[in-house]
Picture 1: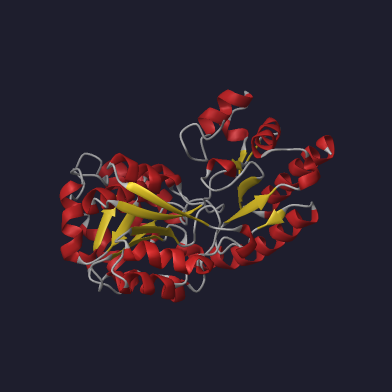
Picture 2: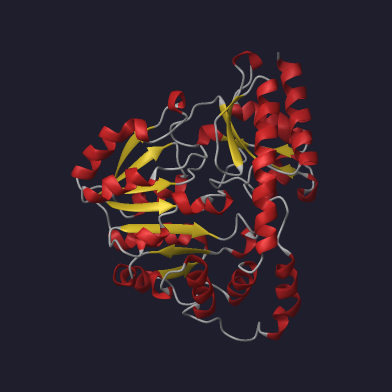
Length: 362
C-alpha cells in the first residue's frame, strides 16, 4: 500500500516497494503543478544562506501583507500556517465542534482532525450519478445545519475535483452553521473569483477559507498555507499555533511566488487544454472520468478490466508510474483511482502503462 501515511507522493515508500530509485518514478499520485517551482524559488534558495541564521518573523508580516494585496482584504484576516494540514487541525481545535458534517469522498485529514478532538462525524455520501456534486444533497445538508453542525467542504473537492456552489455555502451559513471551505486547489480555477469565498470569510464570523500555496507553485517540501476569517474569530486559532510554525524559507518563497504572474497564466492555459485531452484519452481506454475543475481526475476502472485499484496501482508501480488508490478515500470503492494531470509527455507515459495493464488482464 503506497498510501501508508495517508497521502500520495510518498516516493520513499514507492522506492522500497518497487526497488526503483525515487527520481525514476513518474508520480501521478500527488497533485503538483508539473511545471515545477517558478524561477523566483531558485533565487530565494540561492540567497537563503544570508538569512538562515536569523529567526523567522513570528507574525509572518511580509507574506500576510502580500496575500492581503492579492485578495484585497485586511492582512489581519489572514493566518499563515505550516501547510493546509496544520490549519485544518488548528481550526478544528479552536472551534471544538461536537458534530461535523463531511461530504464524502473528501480529504482524509478532515476526519482525522475531528477524531483527535473527540468530535462526532456526520457523513453525506456523494454519488457518481451526480458527478459527486453537493447540490443534490441539499436537504441533508440543511438538516445537519439545523443540528448545529460544522461543515468541512473542499472546493475543488479532493478527490472529485468538483467545486461547491457558493450559494449553497450561503444557505448553510444562514441556517446558523459554521463552515470551513478548503480551497487548496482553487488557484487552478480560471474564474476563481466566481467560486472563492475568501471575501465573505472576512465578513462572517462562522466562515473560514483555507488555501494552500504548495500545489499551484509546486513547492510541497516547504509546507505553506493560510486561512482567512474575521480577525476576532482567528485570535483563538493563533493562540493554539506553535511559535515559528512557518519557517523563514517558506515565508520568503511565499512572498516571491506571488509575483509570478506569467507562471500563473501559463499554468491556467496549459491545464484547460491538457485536462480535456487527458480526459478524452482515458475515456478512449474505457475509463470513466469524473468532470474536474482541478489539476487531477477521479477515474473509475473499466468493469471488464479485471483489476481493482490496489492491483492496478501495483502493476503501474512496477512500470515506474505511480497512481493514487482512491478506494482509500471514504465513500469510494475498489474501482476508483486518482491521477494528477501532468505535461503531455508524462501523460502519454501514463496512458501507455495503463493500456499495457489493461491488455494483460483483459
